[in-house]
Length: 157
Image 1 (cartoon, rainbow, N blue to C red):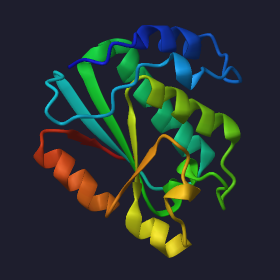
Image 2: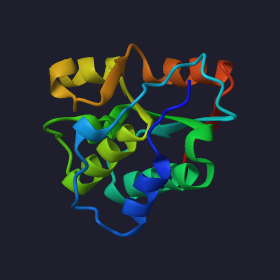
Image 3: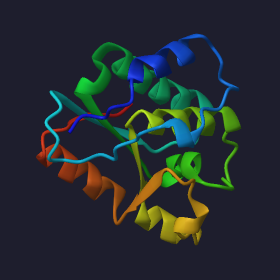
Image 4: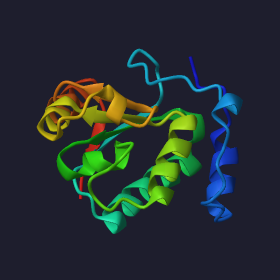
């Protein structure tokens, strides 16, 4: 089942530079990642640093894939170590709100954001400490491995 929400609209919004605009969650018909879906392309990104430029590059890359492949790509971003702060309601690292807003918008277009349970435990976080769109997984690196075993390409930098 393909995500019925038009990702191209998001990319037009993103390209227009309206980073401060917030899309309403009520408008989205978001379908969470399902591994049984048969998207032609599958990719998992490693996000393990809290550096805003690094995070911005990853989110830009995700957006570019959505722009090119639309609904024919399944994307997961796995956040662990310092990168998990992107997904925190009250991050302990200096994460610009605009990056969290961009991640939230990407979620509306079918991108999944997974938060490492081990990192959460180390920080004393529970699921309530995560932004609404973040999905906790037991072990971030294991999540990447399992996604690769399901055919996802792996991207890290």
